[in-house]
Length: 123
Image 1: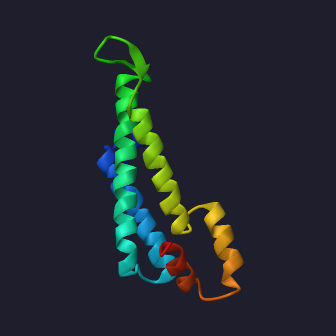
Image 2: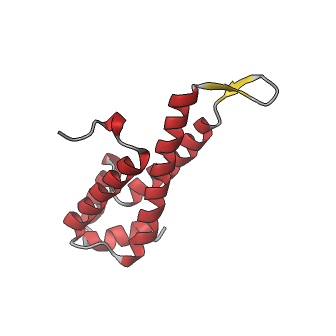
């Protein structure tokens, strides 16, 4: 039986996620364009960092003591937020979200879907 989600390390979860993204893109567009690699690498790093920050929050709690002994929001929350924003943007660029898929659907009548994804990634 496979490992439970909680038992997987952030690295393993990120590896599994990016593998699924690559499979989706390959199935949809037949290949991954070299120009997409940078965005895929950023997506992987942002997702890995997000998972690591999430684990820090889980381990240390929502609030932590600062150097003066004052209870403050865990700084990992800001890391999660920043990574989440980047992930959302990249996922949208690759048409991996329902919103992005609906936008692609609207544009598919106007041209080739491979050209559309290239156009989205060039922004």
